[in-house]
Image (cartoon, rainbow, N blue to C red; front, side):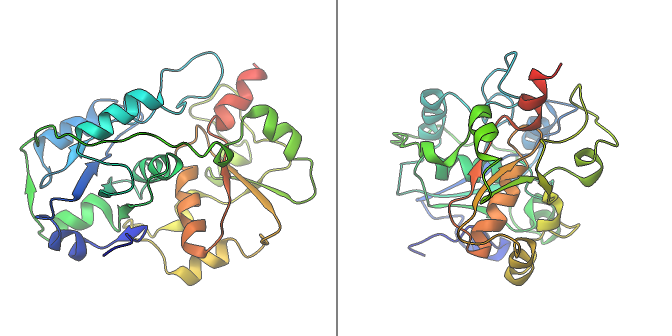
Length: 274
């Protein structure tokens, strides 16, 4: 296909495994065990897939402010993309994980933020691929030579000051993507303070998929955002700019353009309240 859709099926991906212009990226990860995803990758992964770690590849080091998963250093990230054979604007890229797109969507959003549109997530992720008996391997593919010169779309992100200023505007819709109990401040398993940014409404990221990790139909995606109009400025956040990207994927599928990410999320916001 000339234009890669944002979501691809296992059937389609399996048919493309010999495509020299395709790069597959394994994004499996667990917050409580930073090496778990790579260990799983070494055991078995989709044939030909490379691995990227949320903490060390899809994020930059944590500082006092900026959230738990700041956006990666663009030059270092571009080097990693090139070493996987990704050329800006040309290579077809498919990302997957095993947690309802929580981490694959971050990679999907990052590539598009950097100007690369030819990227998709795998519907159903690793679990669907494995259950359907498609090819797997424990072989680590060799490094390649791609040419990735980032072209960041700076207007796709909003920092803390931007959120403070814009959230009081009548046409701004500030979306908290975390689970409802965290949004309501009933629990907070990660950050030092519970609650949400004043004025934010809640749309949990897990609503985008079913329990098996399959994307819900486009009609369901549109229903999630039926209270957002084309005149609204939409800013999406979560704990640290990761699972919010699942909601941004949903908006893309629903035909909603221009939504922005607050990468620091609640972890950045509450760091100024401690």
